[in-house]
Length: 331
Image (cartoon, rainbow, N blue to C red; front, side, top):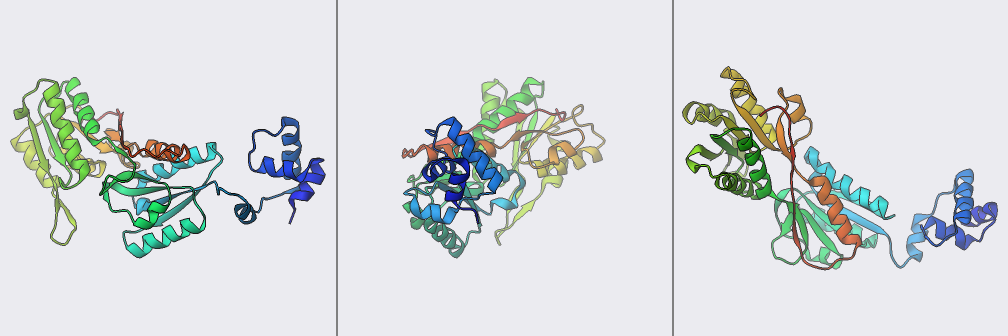
């Protein structure tokens, strides 16, 4: 194994200079930095991270605890956003995927303490309230896509109200006036916020709420599961309410509504407009015509949360980030 002293001898500099280059010290002279980097490449030197960690007062390691994050495709963007900032700031990022069991979370936190991480992003699969372990409070922590049961930790979350208002306003400006909103389970934060946003848009545009129909078509079951009545509800609403546009609670629901509309011999984008939320994986671009939807700000949440930690902020914020309208051809 190549040592730091061998690199120093090859480059013609002191081993302390090599150490400073490896640790991204900006005060190293450019000519010496180039010598060291060339020697590292020619010798194939790799820093001993374990040894370095024991010497440093700070670990330069941050972490994401992903609460079942990997089960939903678009939430990878939280990790990607955090990683971008970590790389820019010469920090390392650990990723631990956990489930909701306390033993899973406790093991993750123990690992983070052992690695002496400098900050943690605790991220949830969907926008919701979470109860954070007291052990995690030993490390600077920010929540992403979730918020604390008590107002004792900073968090960054999607602006669900803005999303509902913007997508509805976009429809209204295209000339749609009679709109049905097929919502998610109204027990969840996203459904409540998006519903309020849709109503806000009608009021701001001076339209009658008589021309707005809202129904939750994702229903909680006694066993904790959810039942979707999307297709049946959409068929009934199209027949009875006769909307000229439908807003769907999320993109997988929109996919079902496409089938209903096609079965009725209607043309999406002409006879009826379809809009949605989340920009879920490849669904919007696979549907024909392509689906207009509001993209969740997961990438931005990851970046914002990592910047908050690296800046060593301590203010308790509940920060909302806007969705982005992805205009396609469905209205």
